[in-house]
Length: 86
Image (cartoon, rainbow, N blue to C red):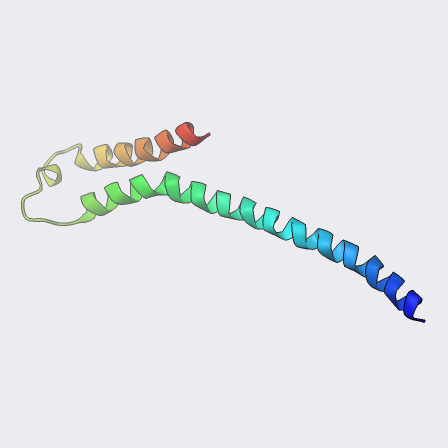
C-alpha cells in the first residue's frame, strides 16, 4: 500500500511542480504590461497636471491655441515612449 501511495504522490507532484513554474511566467507578463502602460501614460499625465493647475500668471491660458497645444504635447509625450520601447 505504501508503494501505491508513493506512486500516486509522485504522479500528482509532477503536474503541480510544472504549474508552479508557469505561474511566475504569467505574472511576469502582466507586470510587463503594467510597466509599459505606466511608462507610456506618465508623461501625458505630467503635462496634463501642469497645464491643469490654475495659477494667476500662466501665459498659456491667454493663448488661443494653448489648449490644443497641450493636447498635442500630451499625444507626443505618449507616442514617443511607445515608439522607443516598441
